[in-house]
Image (cartoon, rainbow, N blue to C red; front, top):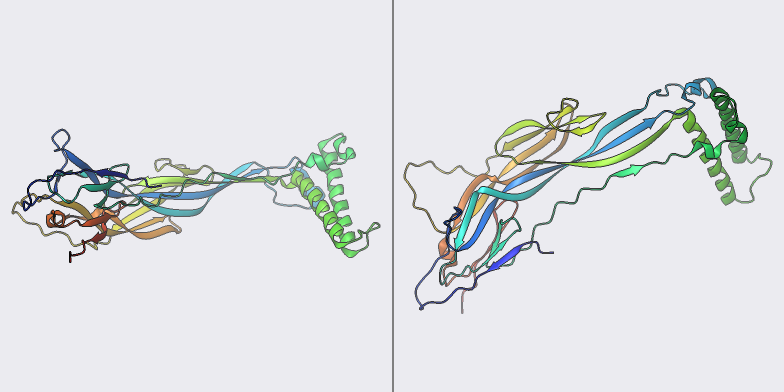
Length: 356
């Protein structure tokens, strides 16, 4: 779906031979001449963190795991552990309120059509622009819980045992019986061997499920949840600062929450666009269309141990604002211009074919 708004103005014609230009002036609310007001963008970073949370719950028979099953190092307390799986950097354009201009549609101009995004960023002149590809939507949380209900696999004797200790002893004995039955089936030594391989697989799978369910009572259970978090950052200068913090117990938290380890963002302008020469001479305001010449900016997301994501991105707020010559939009020139709504830079400038 085209998310841009297209504004089309039909202009009245006056006598032939009189030239006219599209006037573009800085926008001041209340005094702007009738026309189209547009923004040039500044480039916003959206940093998407994907993290997984593992929740551990001890089993009811944890304290007997060493005695009956020789299982050591079983955690005794419930725990929640977060870890970062992935970090991605996306860019999008947002209106730069310091770069807002108004196109005054004078008579006989050849720039009657301007394409703007919903937020008013200029995308095209004399052409219909296609909206930029949207940032992928935030993924929904994914919860994985493959735990079984051990009571569904307990024998009547286990369920009616008089104490937790006796239940643990009987459950451990049942686990050993399951393992012996599975071994006999695998060796072909079971009293009632299945007739074919498919039935054998089904029987072994059932025994595996029973064992896993009963072992949960000793080993405990785990549930995993994968979530994504977005952090929005608009670079304005070379800087290195805390973007957010990450806690193994709490996950992603705000930069001012000292419960987490700092995750940094580094911004470094590579100065790919020359700085305009400084002059004391006052320049006459030129009435034409403005566009950004974005500079390349290096972005890095990291902590004390590793770099999670990095890349180089053109950004509209780094670089210069330049002018499109007014002669491109006189009555004899119907120039088509396409601008990048994320950076404000020119993507394509198409001159009209000369008349034969």
